[in-house]
Length: 170
Image 1 (cartoon, one colour):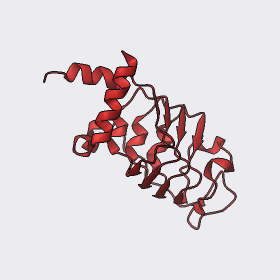
Image 2 (image 1 turned 45 degrees about the vertical axis):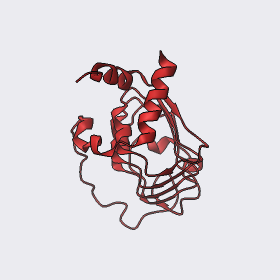
Image 3 (image 1 turned 120 degrees about the horizontal axis):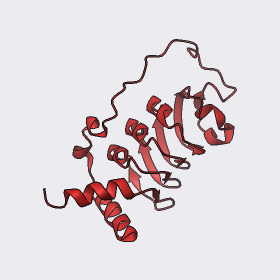
Image 4 (image 1 turned 60 degrees about the horizontal axis):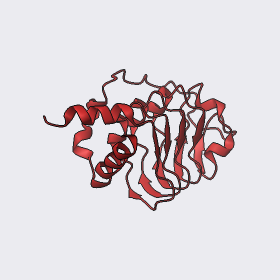
């Protein structure tokens, strides 16, 4: 397919996305997980809603991840346990609920990373969960970001974002 090599090169080149304070709405696209070279992702101060996509776990070299001040709900996906390089993490001021995934990386962040998510519980927070000690199923081991059928989830703004990023890289 014409242009596919260039597209793959873009996916392997983008290391930083900062779209904070842009009033974006809707879901965070699951296709974000194909940007495997991403090191810094800032989606804070928007109006993203619903759940954090599990494909975030594909961003294995991610160092900084800011989702604060959105309208995200549901649980923090367990796939986030795969982000072993995280140095900064902030999901404060959302409506997240449930047990914080139990990874050594997430346990290093203080309560400020989780502020104003009244439904969150478990370490590192002092609020205990009811079934916190229950055994958890292991995560699936597939490393293929295409397993999530991301191609059905591409939105116009994603294409624009990738195009802008490519223009800045060149």
